[in-house]
Image (cartoon, helix red, strand yellow):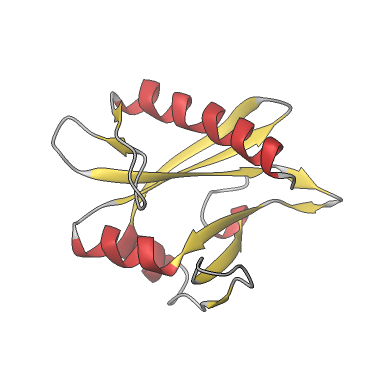
Length: 127
């Protein structure tokens, strides 16, 4: 997905997450929002369908480890045509449990570290 499109659906997802969960923007290298109780979350967006396949969430190992160490989590958003279809909140630990661990691999981008690309139905119910 071109970075312009990724940034646009990311903004849409973050706005929906803030509204639904009463959070505020709080950007760092490893999280996007902060809940009223002080916990943080990284908002991840995936297109519902991309080139005939499910869209994927891109997780970064360094950010995931920080979320896990700080009792943080994710908000996963499935987006189609500029609309959020599904939103799911999940702790970093629960993500690992749901996936039976995470297989990380080099992103191929200098300085970006290791990533995992997860088809959205693996984390968000497809019903």
